[in-house]
Length: 207
Image (cartoon, rainbow, N blue to C red; front, top):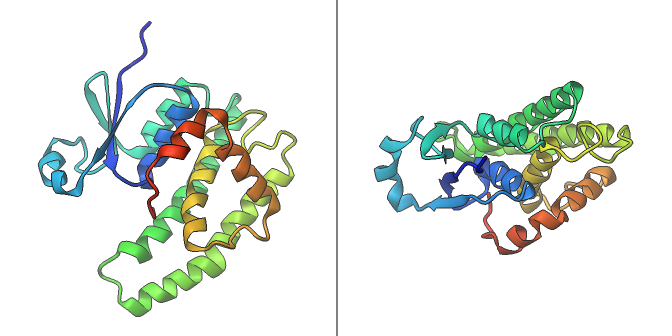
């Protein structure tokens, strides 16, 4: 059976589209990485399934929502966890990351907040939220015999954590100083041979 034709639509930064890109590159699946210019967004928006990006065309049919798309790719290419408990663990870790990302996006983009409110939220994020998140991941890695987060093999859980840490490190360079297992894990994931070409050539964006 022929592989589906995948075409991912997202802006020219990592954000909520990057996990899908990383999954596809890890699985060594060819896809079209359509990076949408902001100037083209008003024309594209009415054609999207949900009114926002990322979305993906699979054999010409458009599907929205980044996390269901990521899970679909992970299941299809055996990156969702090899056992039911591994899959449950992967889902839990994906929720950790989604909560972290939502809090980050809020103080970065919420136009209702005052500047003081944004500064207070960012202070809480850097002093409490990130360390709490990293503490959970550090503990899981300490208890892992394989070095992976959701079972004995690489999974979407490993990729989503390594991905979100890219953004954290750009904003807070010393964030991993007290979390040696997380630091080693990130280096391991980002050192995967399947990702080398993509990581060397992808645009260097803040988000």
